[in-house]
Structure formats: structure tokens, C-alpha cells
Image (tube, rainbow, N blue to C red; front, side):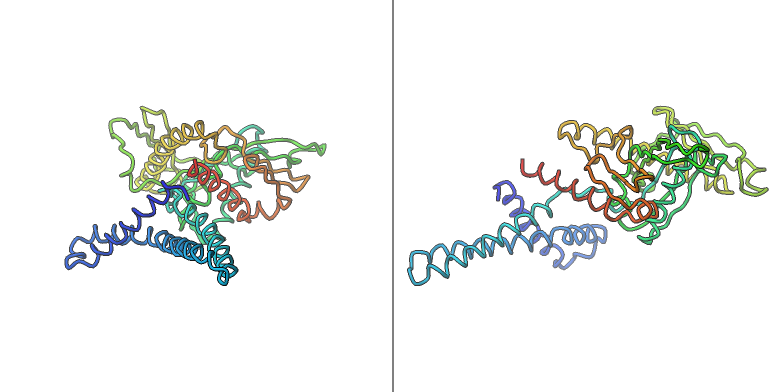
Length: 358
């Protein structure tokens, strides 16, 4: 194992002993905020330190067996001990490197999902609705909550744009690699001659900001307009100025929300989406800088990148970033995303491991 990694593990081991001392102190619970931070930190590093202790034990066994190699009567046993210890060290080294991978601070957050129809007209809007249904079904399987924030429907029942908030444990960690261009190849319902058309949608997955505290938004930078909601919603929603449009002047980001009867709630939802978009723009800028240095394919944050093709005639879905092709399009579009999500996460971890080894 590299010395830099060993040094880091030694520091973590010392830190755990220090935290145990602090938590065992007479006045540990006097400052509950500090107490919670320490207990969270302890929970994070204890599994890593436990693995490190197992690694050191295997290393000590390897050294002890080496000392017995000079004894002819013990040589065979010593060689077997060394082989066993060496295999354990190799396995534990991989586990330790994985445990040391930097954690995305947003992984446990809720998220905002935005799907926009692109090229393809009505067919693109229908595909946007199919994508939303796919993510909604996946969320149901994970026992997450899905709340539509804003939507613009097409004439045929699709979505020109839809924004939803998804709330649940680990939601962002599982869906964060879905951002990008999604392309569909199929015979549209509007096609009378059976020809296959290609359409596209853009998906954006953004972590929800913590009660706006993560993002410093100057009220002077906002222009807030209210207007009468359009579309279905009953008499009240269409006869009052309950819809809200917020423009962030420095960035030009515009957010509309009109799905709720309450102007106050629409404004709160719009502010949440605005904060998430500003935060997302900053993060994508950082990710693209890192990706250009590492030539990373996953998590680059490039929304213009075509990441996946859904070919219905061939029952095929291909993720172009990792060259993964699956022949079960009906199951996937019905929310069975586990294999795709798992493969993307594994590839991302492999990239981080490669960077850690440099």
C-alpha cells in the first residue's frame, strides 16, 4: 500500500481515539451541536479504522510467518500463513481504498428533476412524459416521494417541460448521473407510414439546497412577477394571480411555478428551484474543470452530451458513457433502473480509485 494512504489511515486511527476521548468526557453532551458533529464523524471513520486494524493484523501475520521460513520444520506452514495473509492484505487494501474515496456531500440530499423536450416536436414531448414516468416508477420502488413543481403540457399529453422534487434517502446519489441528453428511436404515434423517428430530451438532476442557506441570493438581484395560472386547475387557480415567475438577474435564470393554488407556496417552490439551479451551475462548472483534467466521462456535468439512446424497435437501451447495452427497454422504462444505476456508480468509483492511486 502507498505510504500516503498508510499515513492517512494512521491519522484517521488517531482521530478516532481523540473523538472517543472527547465523547467520553464529563461535559461532552453540554454542547449538543458539537456532540452531534462528533458522533457523525465517529460513525463515518469507525468502519475505515476497523478495516485498517484488520489490515495491520494481516501485515503482522505476514511478517511473523516470514520469521519462521528459516526453520525447515516450519517452512511449509509459514509459506501457507504468508499466502493467506497476503491474500487478506490485497483484499483489505481494495476495501480501504474504496472506503477512502471522497464522498459527495450532496449524496444524501433530495433533488429537483427537470426534463425538457428537445428536437422532435410532439414526439419529443411524449418522450419527456415517458422519462418522467420512468423516474417516477423508480422513485416508487425506492419508496421516495415525488412532487410536481411545474409542468408545461403538449397537445398530445406529453410535457414540453416538467420539474419535480424527489424526496428520499440517497435520492441524489442514485440519480445524479442521469443528467444529459436522452435520445429515443421509435415509430411515433403521429407517424402514419411506420417510419422510425429520432427525438431527444434533456434531463437535469440537481441537489436541493438546504433551506437556501447554501446559496447567497441577494433579494435585489431578483425580479418577481405574478400572473394568472394557465391550464387545468379549477376555477380558483385560474382566476387569481397565483402563478409566480422569478428571474435571477445576474445569471438570467428564470423559474416559473404555477401548480399550487397558493401564490405564497408557488413562490417558495420557485425559490427552492432557483437556489438549486444556481448551486447546480456552480457545481457543473467545477465538475467540468475536474473532468477536463481527468478526461472523466461520468459526472462531467455536460448537459449537451448525449448520454443514452432508447431504441424501441430493437428493445435496446445503450448508455454511451460506459458502453453498456441492455435489451429490456420495457422493464427499464417502467422504472427498473437498478442495473443502470449500479453500473454508472461502479464506473464512477473506478475513476475515483484510479485518481487515488496516482
